Length: 422
Image (tube, rainbow, N blue to C red; front, side, top):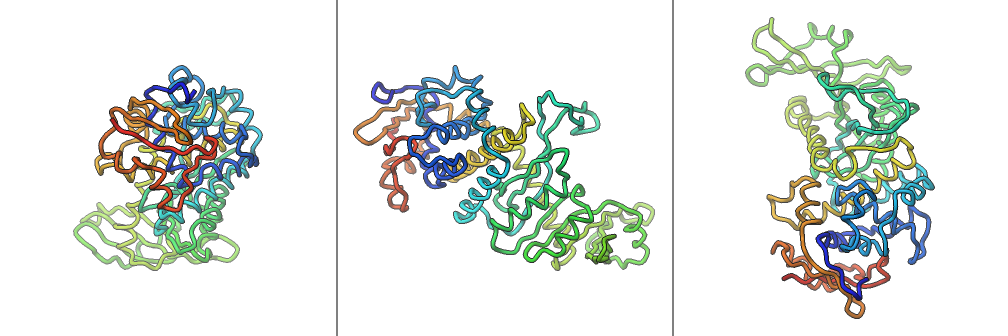
């Protein structure tokens, strides 16, 4: 296929190859499949799923637009794998193996500076599913109809908005269990202290007790307006911070065996006593109360920005509730997101915040070009590529070698890659 030259509009997807080499994507996929043969099929099928995520497509139903345009060749394959082949591959691997993949990717990303690790934002994320299983129906909003959803629990860095990983819910996995597993995974990714910012859904005795005793992580989360919390208000001394805003502190005692004591911060808004509104927070941090409530807690909304920007990579719909299949597919999307993030750093400022779908349409699937082979080099020619890409991709083998990275591409049988721009 390379000898005959490939022409198409998905040539821009080849811009992710050097990012895969920097991330060690091939090693991650061979470790996940358990097959370390350079000619193996399974890691290449997994790589197809990574690139499907980058293109924001859902699978083989897109094959008529993906074939013969360089997509299958990018994965080291002469064909686009069918849904059945992908289903069988995913079903051979467990949730534990996908968790190990997430952990390894997170450790690589931390070593490359993707996570400052100052703030950790955790939040449940419900994905609409078309599973035929009997499932509890849930609403995103009171005005919408209830539908089947798959529950996931994401952790995102508060500064770079990059995902550390996620857990997945089931009838046997509560929000508390999923969050505790996620915290354990984060402990193996981040070697430093960090502040975990959560929402009211995480306000459980078991989780608060565990986080309050964590050796490295502190936490901050809003508390429900329970009677045993609100009854402290008359005894609290509020300090006005500015017009219509005041704060006070107290102690919240958990109803656990140890009667654990947690710092309680009460936020009061309103100017008149008959118009006061109160919002309690609990925290194990020793930072000033006004900083926690007005500067740090609003950072939590960055996780919503992450979902809005990146969910099209595969975190916006689910066709099955088979946990092995779904968890593996969503985990492979993390590799696509990581490679795309590294590519974003080479884009102009006004493009770095494009949604994943816009990036896929305008860059990965919106550039005309051709692909051919010369000796041991695959040469990708881009005809209408933006000028700002050129400086990062011309003479690519030399650039990779200067970074200490082997320019040979293992899933492309040790060919090297270079780009031409016209």
